[in-house]
Image (cartoon, rainbow, N blue to C red):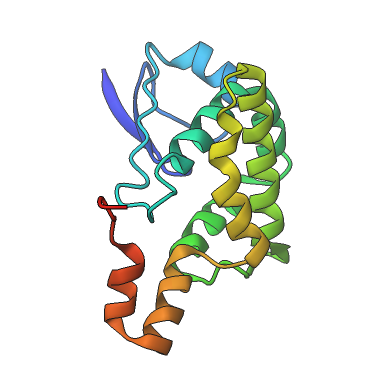
Length: 167
């Protein structure tokens, strides 16, 4: 069995045959080509205090709502999503990719996750509130910390990010 990487969603998966970009929906691809699926969520090893559950809630909600997510993804070509993923690593949050607003797209992704979490019925959608706040102010945590550093120095950043166990 060979291991291939699907770059868009950054997971390594064992395939029965080589991966080609011409497959249809995620569900039909998985059904026809995967022996097992393991979704490992490691995207946020050091979230800002108070945002510890955001990443897990987002991934859980999206997987629970996979049909709607697949429909959403299929609205744009694969190349758009590659460019979007690359832009996320180097551009400010309040940017555009191929004329599409990143905050607008992010808002829809969080809405899809919220729908999935509501369906689970465990009141987990509360963990998306920090992501919704970031979208509303159109700034990533990195951008927020840079602004604090520029205004008040690195000690202010450390103070903002430190966990307080005595409170």
